[in-house]
Length: 636
Image (cartoon, rainbow, N blue to C red; front, side, top):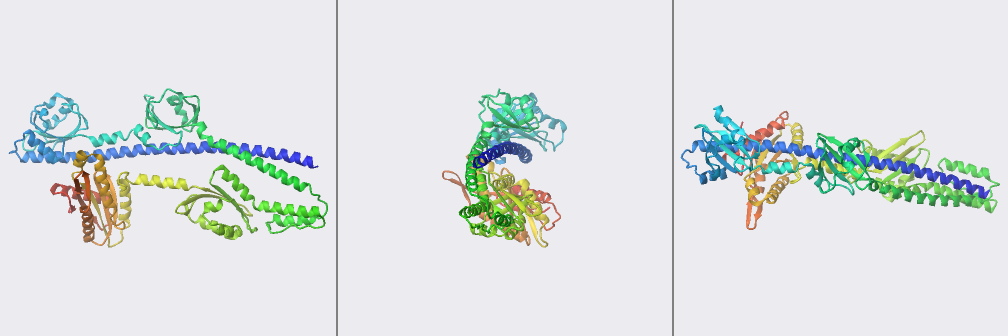
């Protein structure tokens, strides 16, 4: 009987172990593949989101610069129309260009000839000789004294140097005043909106590779690795990549299998790739560790059962069955004590040991879960049972002490109240907040006699989402809100403004910032922007909402104010703080931050933030026409 029992026990447990390994392998395999697919799709969406944000910033930058360039061109025309006594020689034109903060300044007569200019070699050029210059002749032909032309950045006719020109008609006599700018900011912004640049800055895990293929030319237009790599392998071919929308395995360069996920965006196919052996490296380790542990359990169980079978079972079977029935009902404190002979005493002891093992079975399950490396915990309890079953990792995931866990595990009613308390702090769906640093996903299955729950740690995912939200709503250089997010928050503040309170929108423009960038470099310029932003952020949060609009332009919202005197007081404090900030530009040179501003206020909760910002912008424009370094109120 002993041999037969051992034989069948070995066969059954071996079959169970093989089945468990097979199911575990299939589940883990598909789980890893599914997780990798979601990871790649998320990262590809981040790339697309970055491209769209960069494109939006390019458009906003162009609109802002075009408006600024036109204002400078009109200012130049205004000066030249009213200062006829100027000699208009090259030094004088260069001086005027410097005052207007433009790179070139030209005067074109009614015949389309450059008669005066800040660049000597351009004087005498006939505008009709080249397509780039002839575009401005339409202004002479129209006869409109308010005519103007903002030309796109392109190589100029004289030196093939990339420039952007803006021309406005002269009013006192027929002619054109033209200003030119080197489009450094536009070109820098365009260079950051390429797949190659984005991939070079995009964080990747070990073995991951990202690349983009032009769907028209079938050429690789960007790659997260070195562009000297060979791109003639099959998995870089467009025909091979189009069927990877839902994830697919392809043969790599050296014959290895790679997992590829692709997504088409406009005329480009964005792809993510990871070698299969890297993706499933953890699967091999998990299967081997699980096999070893299951073999250990099998040996332990066989030894224990063999020990129990050796004991004779003759008398007292009914007494044992009765007590086992009580134990089955959840009364684990019952001790089986059957006397009469040594064999039954040993059998009773073995049954008690097995009961204790059942009570502690959650510890063995916990060990398996810990070996798998998955932050997972499980529990089970019934209303008619005093104790609950819980894996050891449960108290870690729930953030409870050993003493608290002992109290909860020994009372199913208290544990039920505690779980329901957690479920009141739902963040979204089945995700719950334990504390500021811990989030879990909890699935609970209920039946007529109890509950079964599984808890996983999703803290890392939630923290990553919070980081992504911060990156999408804050300016990278200054840490201030982005302009779009600022408008969203400001609109909410405006709509919820208490009765009797007013708020103001403030538009700010750093004075002579371009000269700082030109003379000291962009690193000093960035430090100058960060120092200015630090002063903005030092203002009291209960009254100030701050953001970077673009380049050297910023905006604020001052709210919870009783009247305009409060607003002016806050602005005066802000400017006093600026006066106390001297920014080093070079060795022995420093500069106090100077900024021009305009503000517009309202007490009407029904007014829109865009209208308020527009009025503040008009006030800023009026301030910069008159002076710099201070602010003025919109008086429209």
